[in-house]
Length: 330
Image (cartoon, rainbow, N blue to C red):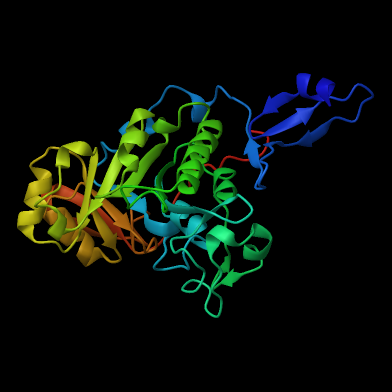
């Protein structure tokens, strides 16, 4: 095996292992974890995914910018392949993901701490349930997904807004949750060639203690706020400020006065999007990808509505050139 590793030639997201007696083997390397949930390791590359472009910074300059919430989680069951496909087809360049580590160590894309809401008739606690059990469950349009399932097919021009659920909303976390956060940092570092801060926004809520830890690693942070939190919130702490689309105009004025990028949540239709943009939102956290999305489809299938500031909001579905997926061997 030593000889195989020494002669492994990186080819995108897989390795070709050279065998002395012929018959090269294509496979993957994993970092073994004592408590299960091995983490796939990816070879360093010099392509677009690992180059010097800061895609997060570029993304935040767009007006408006769009993030697909829970992979289109209102139109589709949350965090499924169908929602991912629809989001990429609609031209989204940012995907919001909620992550929890399951009982066997894998990071699962799921918002709640159990499966009760998303898989009716079940109530599996994520933290104590192994992936071998979770992978058998079915939501309306498909099975649950691991974070690595997304990373393996993430296009090189798409960023992530990562919400690590067990540390994103509370000041203090227990040792297990902190270790899960540290291991997630390692996974992201491996996935994005040592510069995950160029591909990942760290999403959290007002009381999160994870902000300082994320910033120390170079991540930009995005805080999702609610009007009743603004009176005591220190808006200087965060890089991107989020607020409900229907929050009072005075609340939106507090955010826009900072000069920082702002994002409205959660958008499910064009009327909500227009309202948010009219109040000063720079971005939209949208969860109905065939209705509110960034893709300028062809004129025959797309209705355009003009909103404040001359911004074009594209609504309804249609053909759109998709981001090129990262595939094995590239």
